[in-house]
Image (cartoon, rainbow, N blue to C red):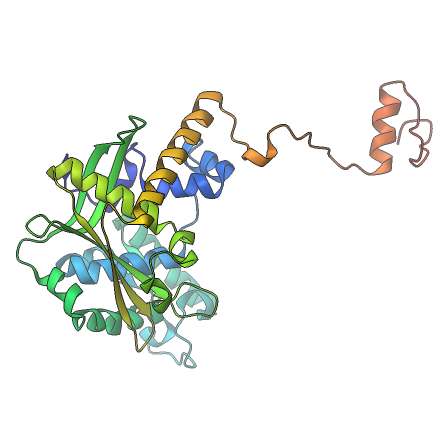
Amino acid sequence: MLITLSDAEYHARKELSNSKLSAFLASRRDYHREHILGLPRGRKDCFAFGGLLHAMLLDPADLDGRYRVMPTRADRGQEDGGKPDARMYLRSAADKAYFAEWEAECEAAGIEMVRPEDAALALPMVEALAKHEQLAEYLRHPKAMREQTILWTHEDTGRAMRSKLDLVIPSLRVVVDLKSAAKKPGRLSVDAMNDANRRDWTGYGYHRQAACYLQAAYEAFGENFAYVLGFIEKSEDPTVSAVQLDVDSLSVIHGAEEVTDGIRALQACEESDDWREPCEVGVQRHEILPAWKINQLAFESGQGAVEGATEVDGDGR
């Protein structure tokens, strides 16, 4: 089923997504806390930046209704010392009160807050992508469907799934996924992604995402699609790169296997309500206690002091 959903509507749905599956594979206990117990998780700035970039590329008409740049002291006509980060550099009580009121207004309206430096960085990234021949052609395509949600069923496990595709162009049989890539040593880089079999590729789970998106497209349109992953480097002078895969690519085959195994592991945890990691199963966990606590417990149970532990006085302390 192909439908259009807002981000809030999409994330409120109960079907499993690649993002949720990746969260489970990263930490079963964190997944349990967030998605089973419903405990809130703090939103990272990188998510806000990624959402802003997607809005600028895919839905610029609704940009003001979804994102707002954080205020600074300069916005109030005050000297900001060249430091634009609103959260860190609003010092006085009046500044903090002003920011708290502004933040509450954004939250009430469902508007995402973006740091000024991120907003400034996003513009050259959008301009760089517009100069990339292949990705720009997809973005300008008259029949491109933007931010479409596909509800589908995983074939091997029967699990209800959801995928939100940045761009899908049925006439070209292509799915386009856009990502920002950090320009930092030791982190994901655009150049490293030109080889789809590198560790950087699988370390971020993009092979699983490719597998999910291609199966979702097949369920929706009845044909095999190509998957194009476009990377825009997070930099003032960004590099743009694109990697294209199909259902027969080794990365996609490997990703599909991991998705199937991950879903089965998740279903086993749901059925047993056991959210331990595989390495913890069958391992007896010993809690380390101080000597005084060991002796206190021994005294209360009538066993007396434990050899090697500090003696306690008559009242058990």
